[in-house]
Image (cartoon, rainbow, N blue to C red; front, side):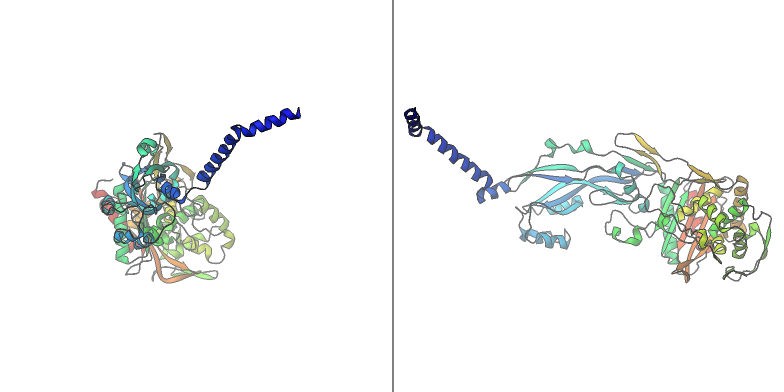
Length: 560
């Protein structure tokens, strides 16, 4: 048996099998070295022939005004990238004047990797100029760019996007989920020569994922244009630091126009770096409203029955209140005034006496009911709740100050929303700026509509106060807001600016809030001119004429 096994082993080693085994080991070893430890020449060659997947922006949903006029849309644009494997840094200087200097400096040095953006979403003219240079390793692709065809019009409400079309502010941010379209992928095959072949049409149909969502606003572009023009004129004339203007339908709460100054152009990305320009004064600015707040206080006093419409109060030039005093503006000394004339003449002394009759906790709760100290539910970002100190802080002269519109902070949107309750007969309404929203499937997913938060004043008191506000324009502090084209009613306001706990000298906020036509109000509007530094600073003389000009411009365009 042992002899047979020995013979079989000898025959195996003398046969072909050992060579088959050795050949298998050699081939396996060669495969390992080729695949796992390739020659440098093979590596260099493979690097010059490869697939490239480049994410590009696709169509973002549109934003339009109430009449379907475009406010934000997507248009074709051109972007460029370089592949360091084919790019010669010495060619970088050829792009001077066409690209920013920091980009030119970057690509004029050796680059690592295989992909570097050098320009995003530039115009066709500039793109053609770059392509005309015919530089190896420089590639162009087409994507979509966010365009705001009306430039700065309604910029603070519309907002803006980042370079990849993600919303960063305004409607663009709040409704990003509806407007945003995921990036498409463009596929490139690189030849050994460096030529890029776009095969996206066969591998990816970008049109299939383009977003068709649409946001329609309640804003009328014509009213918006008038607001912005007249507000900017007032800012320039009075050399003011900031301004805000809002026009609203008092019966529904829908915004017809919303302006903030200074403004910006969302098409100009350099503007987005200026915080003063992009700040939305209409919804984010908190300021002391001054006398424009007096109708609200009178409403609360009448509702709580601490006064009555025919009451007459003594109004000397100044009265002592706890640790402070309340004075009339200028050298006014009205003597005795009825409750209505206290509003018409804008008497601080008369209002202080009325405010002091209401217990702090009761006043605080009433102001909360009127929407003060609460974020308005509008479909925008950055909306402020204002400043309403807790009643345990209402010591000394504070209640009297609040009665004259000082010591409390509101945003322009908050103040106009509260005033609407008087204008429409008693209903505090949620303000809204979005009329409806259509998603990418053509389905309406949201519709703005009238929403009553609560009733804050009885119709009879609201009717009486509207009559008083008409008198303000006819024979009171608001006469410069009056116009022959319609019957206007309103209230002026002049408030000092608080700085580090004290009121700063020569720093004021001038405002006028009103509505028209008086008999059947269809429009409510607030004009605020912040810190005018040239000439007048009273609300009646600074903001009143702006109000009148807007009303007359709207009448000329047959808007009402």
